[in-house]
Length: 128
Image 1 (spheres, rainbow, N blue to C red):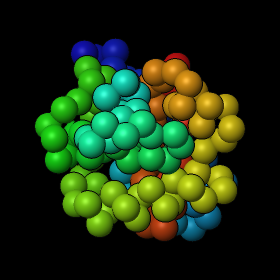
Image 2 (cartoon, one colour; image 1 turned 90 degrees about the horizontal axis):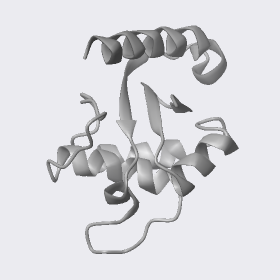
Image 3 (tube, one colour; image 1 turned 135 degrees about the horizontal axis):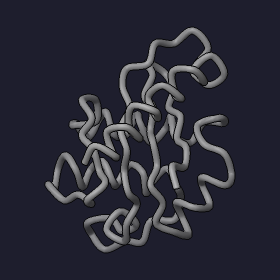
Image 4 (cartoon, rainbow, N blue to C red; image 1 turned 45 degrees about the vertical axis):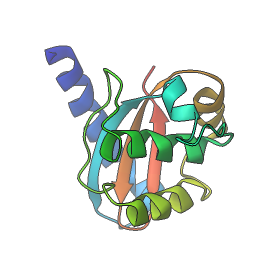
């Protein structure tokens, strides 16, 4: 457990240090780790999700709405409502929210990701 706390602290520090690039003058609201799994790649109606933005949003719906999470998933304080998750998905689709390697890993694999939340932007990076 301590290992994951160290990784989480390092990830927050990394996000803080890179926030000038990713979010200009925006303040970091928070960050969390999430393991992408098969459950995150399917909407609750059984529809297969195809984009990284949809998958990352579903991960948060699984956490907040359905109480389903993966072992590496962490809580967040900002994405508990459907409206917040819809806005979150729109921000995930913006240029700079994640690079092509991160998008590909989310769609095609089961990576551990770190999501950094700002007022008007999001930054997602691979942790493994």
